Image 1 (spheres, rainbow, N blue to C red):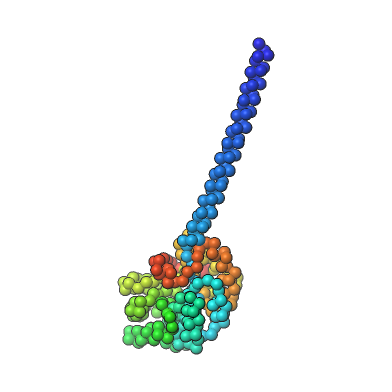
Image 2: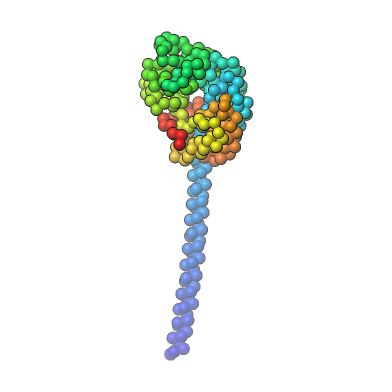
Length: 285
């Protein structure tokens, strides 16, 4: 009787061990399958985000033979070239950008709240102008920049907060079938509301790349726009030729592979067509 009991006990222990072994195998397989699904979902999400999220780079201050012009035009991505009118290389830079397939827009000089009018260059929009003179200067600027399909403001913190003047500017923009990019040099801008009233396609800057002329700061701003893209479908960023030109082009060139992993590069006209308008600007920390 004791022998039979021992045999039964041993059989129960073996069965229990086999059951535990099978249970462990099932848990391992389930965990492995779940991990694979998570990884696959992560890859799918990354791929989806890179396909649907867009980044538009705008480079200001072309038109005066500025430092970094050549380097910017060599960047292997589509971007938007903002050309100042009535300058020595305005037509040359606009033609070169157009031949490379980039968007060309007028970089319209406008009076700031601080600074000298002499900094603006010829044909600038200032607060003391009549409506007729504002209209004439905007028309002349558009005619001076070949292939221009839009406009943004050079400086302009005083003018883009002036409803009277911006209504004239945006009316001319509408008549030419163009769009307007608000560089957002002031939080008091009236561009969004006036443009909406007039039915003018409008975009807004999100990040200034090179308001400080160091590669360290420009790289920091690239990281800022990358973070913006983690939570938004699109981003517009503005850089410059001139004093920061070579630094900005160098940082952008290095950053292209990483930025392509989170978004694809587009021109402003692509964003206008797809109606991806983001009215908020990120402050520079």
